[in-house]
Length: 337
Image (tube, rainbow, N blue to C red):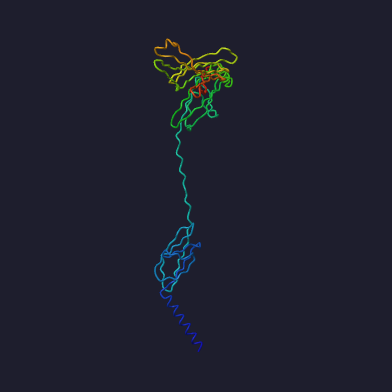
């Protein structure tokens, strides 16, 4: 009894399996080498080898593997049959890059002439088979060193050859002999001589008076007074007793004067003087000449170098008196030897 029931159950199960796979077929995909990604009708199905159960029908199988060409094939799956697809993949060949051929460079020619014919020619240190006059052809563009040798003289030259052109060099041994015969000048000695001459050049002193802003005018009745100002610029070299004097009227506009001075150490003295002169009908009775009513003085030492400009910029106010500054700059006078 039990055996009959078991047989019936097995038969029922086999019937269900048969119904589940009714109308299906089988697809086997193999690749060489293995491990390729398999897609069936663009749906991923894993890596080869694969064994698939599919409804009967037509399918496109595609396999891909890095460094190999993609392969594809259409296969027909039949009921209850195994359809096999096998791919032998081809390795991808690396792209071969063909280098571009260099463009030909246009060459240039060099014609060499000297007043002494038959001079040997060395081009970039290599002796040439020809002597002057000569033309050397098909030279690459660029700069070359040339040495001409004749009668015991070696004359150097540098020349640039241009593409597609003939460059001509025409040199004179006679002129080269004259240059060699001239005495050689030591640059350090030349600079020393120039400096000696420069130390003999005078300095320049410029006195610049800023516009005067302090002026007073007072008066009562018929008697009026007018004020005027002057700057006295005095200087004397150290050890001397006499002062050299420059007197400048101080106006409401800028005033400037310049004079030469030899180098040395100087005492400089600036004096601002205010004068007053009566005006009007009573000027003759009271006073006919101007008189000094105020004076301010400052003194300073000043070192004066050769070939240098010293600019004294001077201003004056009632509160501060004389205010000055000294601006120094090199004259850089050209010196011929």
